[in-house]
Length: 371
Image 1 (cartoon, rainbow, N blue to C red):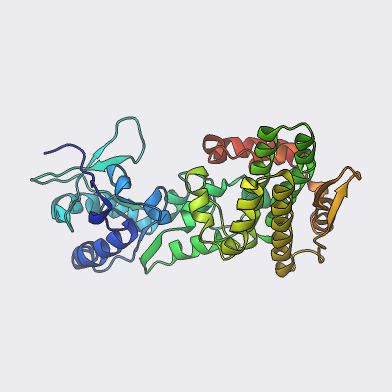
Image 2 (image 1 turned 180 degrees about the horizontal axis):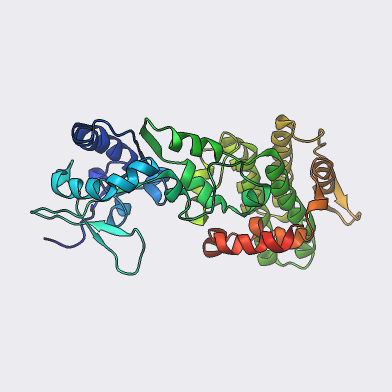
């Protein structure tokens, strides 16, 4: 037995979703259906990690990567068979698939974290998770799949968790529970979407004029910090306007490249961030505002918003009239059910990875900020 197995170059790499689709159809499906022909099930690769999102490369192969997937059973079948099926795979899976070990060594102190390791004899410690849909979806969030999802629950769910549960691929589903659960979480209901974009536009409104003030003080660092912060919020809006969840910081920019609006706004973002002068940066940011407002208007989720560029307090700072869109959104949401919008805003604005992925913190915020 050797230690961690990991690739040394991209030339040897196979994307994880492609690898595991093959692993399912070539190895797992024939074995499982021959031995358990009367069990309905679903098979997928969803949840945590870069392979699920499609951003993996050869460097990803050193942990939680390789021949792996989930098998979902009904509650009744899981209770009866899950230990037996787990044991069956330990003694019947091929020891490698396409050159990759199917045996894993767990990382101490981490849940569900392991790396590939060659093993010449059985049993193998495989990475096929035998689950129910309900148990799997309740690992990171709390959801009763038998009921409608409440408004407060939707607001509490971290965007990263929603992305993980709805990304990846379902290879097979004869129980339909997995497909239905993913469909229900595919994107926010309109009221939740409006609350989230309202929070973002409010935040932009609060500091967009500060860029000009920093410029007057020859504070390039201050300008850059504010511009970058606003650009990130505008990129979040791009995701939401295309009905997509955004990932946490590691994959935020890479995922942004996949949006339809990306090619149109990329040069404007570059100009806003890297423009040689304050006026060049201002011009890039204002054109970016206009493009994103145009995108907003295509959704018909509010009354039409004029992409007006205004002169703040006649000081010579040019920027989008954010108050206009804020008022239009306010017409469509029930602010009466919110007792502390500033606190509620933290679910969208505090997006450091340890906070933005923390469901327990979000639940506390929702409890204190809603009536």
